[in-house]
Amino acid sequence: MDLVKQYVKKRNSQFFASIVLAIVGVVANLFSYVYMAKIIVNLINKNASLEFYFSVCLIILLMFVAKEIAAGVSSAISHTATFNSLGEIRNDISNKLFKMPLGDVMSRSSGELKNIIVEQVDSMETSLAHLVPEFTANLVGPILLLVYMFLLDWRLTLLSLIPLAIGMSVMMSVMNDNYKDMFQKSVSIGQRMNNAIVEYINGIKIIKTFNQSSSSYEKFSDAVYDNAQFYCDWMGQSMNRVAIGRLLSPMGIITIIPFGILFYMNGSIDLTSLMTLIVLSFATVSSIVKIMNYMDDLSRISTITGEIEKILNSRELKNKEKGYEVKEFEIELENIVFSYDGEGKIIDDISLSVEANSVSALVGPSGSGKSTIAKLIAGFWNIDDGKISIGGVDTEEMSLERLSSLISYVSQDNFLFDISVRDNIRLGNKEATDKEVEEIAKKSGCHDFILNLSNGYDTIVGEGGGHLSGGERQRISIARAMLKDGPIIILDEATSYIDPENEAIIQEAISNLVKGKTLLIIAHRLRTITDVDRIFVISNGKLENFGTHSQLLDKSDLYRQMYEASMKGEE
Ligand SMILES: Nc1ncnc2c1ncn2[C@@H]1O[C@H](COP(=O)(O)OP(=O)(O)OP(=O)(O)O)[C@@H](O)[C@H]1O
Image (cartoon, rainbow, N blue to C red; front, side):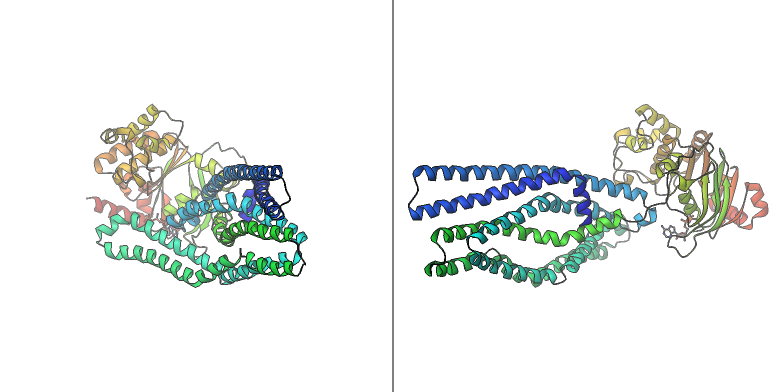
């Protein structure tokens, strides 16, 4: 609920205007009933002129028009404010995801995140656009009317509230029946179904390769079945009471008529008041029914917003922009310690320095922590201890925007968006002209294969770049990183997919493009990094040794073994 308040507050005046107009609409509607009662009473008493009826009908008509206009404008204002707020919430979530440690984002499945950003934010529409103005107005209207009815005859008014009180308490018994827990469960079952669907679709290639279609489909269909079963059971438990509650709550008339007749017969109420009360009790019905429709939304709002709040309130990377200028681009790691889960140290007291405008490489056995070091330099996580600085400035004293403007990171997964090849490369620098995009593609060995694609540079690459080969994706990622022109380039296994013919072109391109830049390569094929300025050997999260290729052949057994194994593997 705090989340709703927070976003309502930001558009206070718009929501206030929509509430006021909604109240005007509801009051106009209720007044039309007051005037209807006047007509009935005067018809019974036969004491009014034709002009009187005509003018009352005109007033009712005006009330009706006023109600429609006020409700329409109120809804337009609240919807405009709501959709702006929903846009803002989605923006805030995506900004937040950028500021959160990568691990915290990755610990949620893409299905779960999609569910929160799309479905759950969407479901806030009801609360913001309808609940805020309509619930308030439909609550205020009947209260005003009840005060008026109370003044006419307090006994009948109280009696008219009995069915409402019984109906509401039956409904409340449903709400008290762990409604919040059940709704929370429905959200997580829904999320599990979402995840199963997303996983099934994403993993379809593997499923086919390993002929797992029946068992994976089972997981997916089980999740759908569980979801349906859960709702059937839940509704089965509560539907009868909900139906009774909904039936009874607006039935004030069942007490007013018999008791009204009784009071009239014993002379304790006049006909005018009785008729007015009967008509007005009808008037409260429509508002009460509307309020009841919102009760459900009210009780589930905290669960819906809870998931969104969890993301918006989750921890952020510590990076704070302090405005220190970075003039040189050497990278210094001082006694850094890091673990993904806060327990097992993945990086254990590593210190190393990558000189500015040099080419360095991280090598080491699989799982030794090379990619983790690269990601820590790029600011994907904060380190637990120690310091990483660029040009003498602590990277945690730079905003993520500034850090990412300094570093072009070509990761192992080379994710491409489902847009054209040209736009994928242009992500490196959105100001780049088509010519600049093509120039960079030529330099990174992409131009020829791009021209061979069905639509050349305008070919849409498919989800995650699925229409391209692994090597093609990698080369486009390199072109994208090169176009960004950051002073530091980190290539995480950037050549792992490149075939032998293209490898030479790529190596040549990289060496041209990185002139005057600081380059850190994480390479598996040691042959490709023999002439770099400095090689760091990482083993079990520690720095085992460092030096040039020939120095390491002399002083590091691990390096020599890895190099020999690597050369054997390529024979
Ligand atoms: N997101 C993560 N959450 C938890 N543990 C992780 C995560 N990423 C990597 N690890 C673990 O951290 C250790 C180091 O992984 P890292 O990817 O840095 O190794 P690497 O040397 O780059 O390996 P490779 O050469 O196989 O890519 C491994 O044990 C790995 O399982």
